[in-house]
Amino acid sequence: MKITDWEIYQTYRNIKRYYKNEKLALEKLKEKWLGFFNNERRESYFILGTVHPWPKFIIIGVFSFIKKDECKMEQLTLF
Image 1 (cartoon, rainbow, N blue to C red):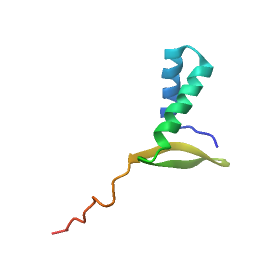
Image 2: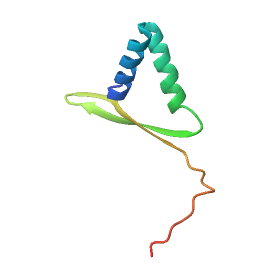
Image 3: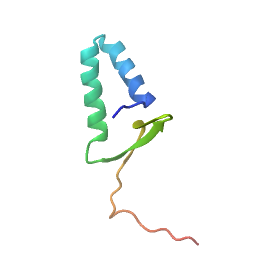
Image 4: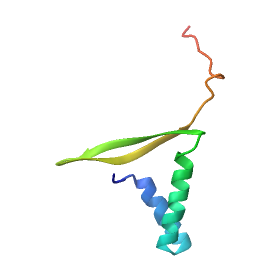
């Protein structure tokens, strides 16, 4: 699946400019994104979309947040 999220491209450009090596930049990008989004502390979702007239789904964004401990959450009252 193709990723068109601008943040991943900008992160790649910054890493490539810092290391001045495309292969190393791709490895560092993989470490950063997989380590950041794929761990027990975060819950992550891909935002999918299509580009008219092609009926393929692509990743257009990533939404990620830190999980809250359900035991600590308390129901609030409306009034």
